[in-house]
Image 1 (tube, rainbow, N blue to C red):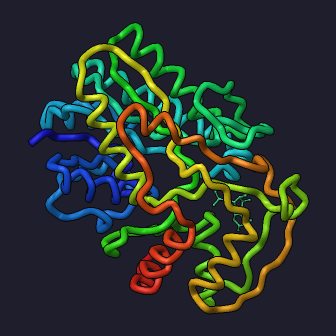
Image 2 (cartoon, rainbow, N blue to C red):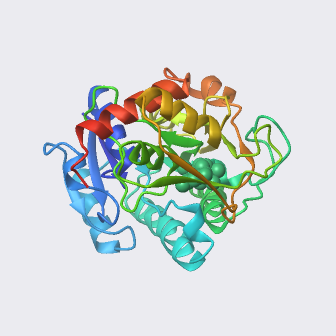
Length: 330
Ligand code: UDP
């Protein structure tokens, strides 16, 4: 069985990827500093190293002990809003941290990698569906910190022989359809879990960050992708990068191709939960593009991926099921 090193594997998306890797006959090895992840989000039978990607000695040890066939690199800071206040942290963890990991890979002759990038690299554009050939122009340091890593990977592929794929995630949401893991950020900043917490009475109201965007209902449009589909994309991308030792670097969007506004998400949450709650209109959140919707064709062409749960209603249903079953967990 091949070992796959997964940095940030105890996080929300990482814990779903671990399940999918095991289901597909891989052995995940999780490397996570638990700054946001949870030890109990992953099965006790998965090797777990609590360390930081800035720690060379810990990285060397994990490569020597487990000899991973490939790396899935997820460890990162993820809040676009926070990056507008503290950009240095994002460049340090996301950009410098990735460089450190890539150097450890090079020292240990591991050259296959799936990198978690983001739709935030696109920034504000006026096209309906974003595709990977477009010029990147991130609106915030979070997006720029990830775009820089894509640039590094392109060089690591052409000069050091890496075989790499960067997956540009759109808005990951939902939970494992069987309820084994789900979203547990603390503090929570993402729209769907915040709306569900409001529906459950844990918050007094949900704020809409900006209702004056140039969109049909004035609120931001995002492409919400089921976390189970996102996890599946990683396993398929892993198959692609490990299928050849030829140097290559590819970028693929992971989204559904369908946009949903903040107001539409709130209405769907009201329907799914059958609960009413307070909605308050607030100012725009700095750094938010008006619309981010994927053209997901390339992921299908490159490694045969397509979403199984493209409907935001399903995503919200699974998130709500997990939330209700785990309401006491933090
Ligand atoms: N949003 C909102 N209220 C909130 C949280 C988020 O209106 O309490 C909006 C946010 O401005 C963005 C969309 O919901 O337009 C999705 O935000 P989220 O933070 O979930 O993901 P992002 O798109 O920033 O990755």
